[in-house]
Length: 123
Image (cartoon, rainbow, N blue to C red; front, side, top):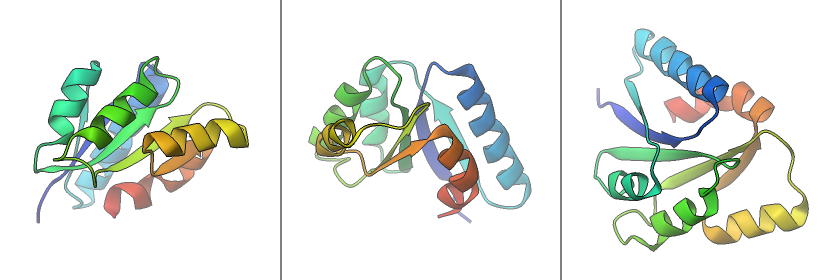
């Protein structure tokens, strides 16, 4: 079984802890998941282009979130990388449109993410 490598960038300690716990729980249930937390946009862009990276989770409250999404999408090695944006609040249609146009595949509130994380990590 191959290990799914998920990259995440956030400054929200609660979100980071939640992701770590879920990844560990699923790994114990025989779903091989590794989550790597990154603090710099340049590092995220570089690591997202590596072959074994499956997905990027971006905290949309992170100050450079949109820049990170655009940079990942403009790198030829990571144009198809799944990018999920997590937000503590619901965005307006205009805000969502801007985030989607930057290259984000999915936008979720923290509550929606908490509900869907098992399926997101498994598939």
